[in-house]
Amino acid sequence: MARRKASPFDLWRSSMELGALAVETQAVVTMRMLGMAGMWPVETSENDRMMSEKHPAFAKAATAATVTAMRGGRMDEIVSAATKSLTTKARANRKRLVKRVIP
Image 1: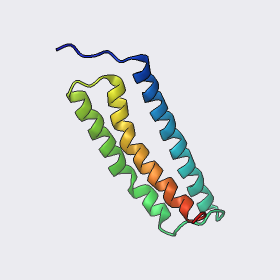
Image 2: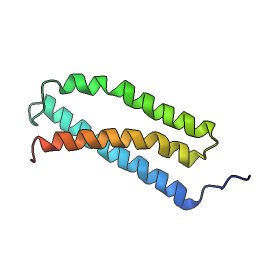
Image 3: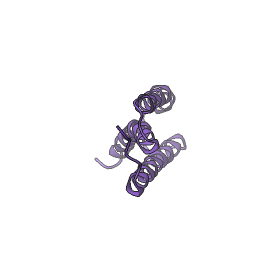
Image 4: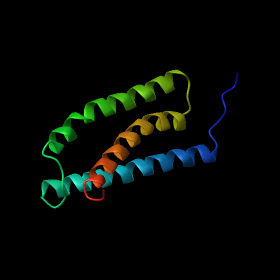
């Protein structure tokens, strides 16, 4: 069975997913940096949380990308698989950090 080639829309969707990840990540980094400077209300455990969540998040993304690649996924599908779990984690962090200021 022939694999379907990636359409321009598939490639565009992958780039939009990467863009969404970049925006979510930058928002979280900004709020955490402001928290370190005492300008944003963060919990005292935020620094530890920031460091301890990296390895599991990247391992999950790498596993999703590897599984998709081993199943014969296209490059845009592999990127989407890796991006999805990272975006979910970054979005959850952003919502949690914003909730401390805007109830």
